[in-house]
Length: 442
Ligand SMILES: [Zn+2]
Image (tube, rainbow, N blue to C red; front, side, top):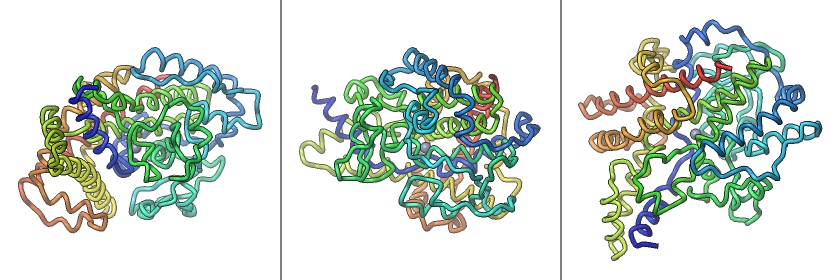
């Protein structure tokens, strides 16, 4: 291996091991304003909640065919796709184990809760239903974050609006769908006991992420490094091993299938799952390995660290991790405050619902994720990074106790960050709608 390659690998691995849990902190909040005014959603009739088991029982034969088609599509169209081992077969006649077998055929975490609940916007309290217990929503042990959100129980066979199903489901993939899927994923961290699915899924070893954290193994599914320099890929094959494209395609075809066969609740819920990945990739730190640092500088700082001056390298690593976290936290706090204060007209709300840019992106097709969505996000990374650098105050948002109300800054630097966020939120809305439009074309 060439020295250059070793250098890039060491820096990339160090940066990728600092990743946090989420991209945009709560996908539900942005999905509501992005879709609320869309005629396809606004005018859609409420749908009846159908259990996952009922859906599978009725559709097992058709789903077995669909799974085969999905696999053929992925092998033919997704670059660097790790094929699903032929030993993973969904048997539509094994009626006792449909749920587990289906989740495993999708190569998801078979332990996910798949609970029936809705997430409301902060401060709205629309539903009279009982609160849904937070510990039953995700597989995580650390659930502090969820305490700020409002979850309500959704009764079987009750009616619910498509908007609520879509918005609620858009946050769901962060609750454990992609945890523990690798050949070295442990049931209990540090104990060496590999998960049942990790042994058979064929994803290989976890390419990056800090394994000390329970959520680290989802990172390669929620980030897409499709636009790095050739030398970076040549250096570390693991940088190519990101999988959001796989998930978006799986959920899109599942959603279309569910709509077509008369299961609209699952059609919307699967669409929401796919939206999650679309939205993750609008975050430039999710599509760019080291925003604001070119390959030359990456190499240079590593050379310095190799001769014993680790400062430059550590500074880059810390900087990427800090800014990644800070912008997400800041955006969330700003957005949260809008709902909590019941503001109905706000620049950010308008950005999410602004449809003026939707058509220019073209229709969501098989090339959209790489050539449109992640390309745009990646092209914004350096600029975002430099704006964050100018507005040092944003680093206050590394502290999760800081709320938006605490920001008294009226500097031009803050305004630049705000304006940039508005541009990104407009894209978030547009890509969200374009994906939904594609799902509704069944
Ligand atoms: Zn995510």
